Image (cartoon, rainbow over all chains, first blue to last red; front, side, top):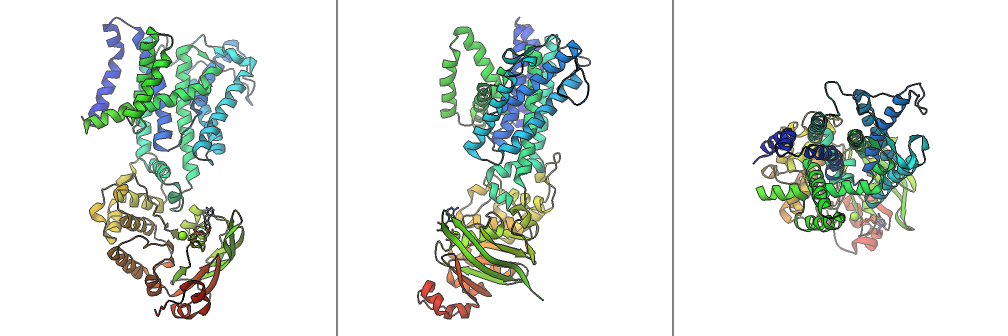
Length: 323
Length: 250
Ligand SMILES: Nc1ncnc2c1ncn2[C@@H]1O[C@H](COP(=O)(O)OP(=O)(O)O)[C@@H](O)[C@H]1O
Ligand SMILES: [Mg+2]
């Protein structure tokens, strides 16, 4: 089966999810698939960084969290009709998804620009540690803000208003997330094959060679890092809608680690690996949690097996099976 | 009229107190092949990295076309026409040979901040022609990582020549090559003579004495002599310090 056929099949399957869920009489499956699509988007953006740009970020949950907080803060000020204090102009937030979602992307993109500017001068383990440190700083910063819920976070009473969709309808919400996921994957795919993407990939293979061929590698990496951050922010905005909540826990380092685990499970060699990993992780979590509350103890060995025996994750396993 | 393409004044660089380059003076004339020889650890690779901009000197200056480029970053220097090869060839291992050259051409054409069109759709013919020049066209679609050592060197040359440099810094381009490959590279460099100025670091004395218009000898980070191959072969200081009395009559 070639890639195009496989992608078409996945899209058809994705479109059919709510109907399948109804057919088996378990509408909860649609909500689970929504979670998978949301996390799939965040992990795919991480996969773009790790697998294609060669940048192992251990702070990706920070950008995800910023996206969630953007939705929560815009909602809070809108519902209280109070101006947002840290803005230079008077604005009382918004409930519109057409405002909230792009702003979530932009805020995370900008914060990633800042983190990237300060961390992309380092390599390897140092880069991992610095991205981790920035994410933890943001985590503690949000805890220190009582106006935005501090440790408890912010609840959201009203989901984003998206024209033509009702996010309180599970189908509508799922199709929004699924549609955005497909859009993000197509966008990333296009970028990976573009002139910019080739530079990003070349930089991960031999940075010194690229520099002495005339490329200011830092700038390209910075943009790639910010783009991945922005996408994680969009994903976080959707998650805030799903959970009707945003809190510092979304940014905790363990959440960044979880995203890396999903990526390893799914495989870093392909863009879809991140999505496959999210599907597998959330699916396993759902199944195992039904058996035991110590499901993480079972997930651990599965992860080790994947690393040892299915090098390249789930996607690597399948592509080897095909060739 | 000064015809100095590259000039190095008092360049020094120490690593943990070891002076890898110690007050190096060099001037490279436009169009010449300038050999740089010296025993292992003399500081030849360090000198090349200082010239390419990958290392910053502790003191001293580098001039290109009379312009001080000492503080110019590596990626800017190649836009002035200054390219280098590495002692251990550096290429993009997970790309095909053709793609390696295509990336180089893409950078040369200055349009890497583009996000939509597939990159490897362009410069294919030009890249293939460059590979053909080095006799690599049959392997155009193989992964670069599949190449044997000698062919890797040739690919690296194809990649940097695609940038159409004016000045080439070659760090032992024949090291580890078989006789036939070595002869092919010698011929290629001979063809480039006049079009491209070269600083040639090479261990094979026959090659250096055959190709170089002038030679500088580096010993313990210091240039002890510069001159024509005949001068260098006769220089008693050089013979004592480096050639060890061996005969080299050009
Ligand atoms: N990055 C580095 N860190 C520490 N020492 C180095 C480094 N690069 C070179 N040196 C030292 O500098 C000296 C010159 O090295 P090099 O320029 O590679 O010599 P050559 O190319 O002539 O063999 C050697 O003593 C080497 O060990
Ligand atoms: Mg050397």
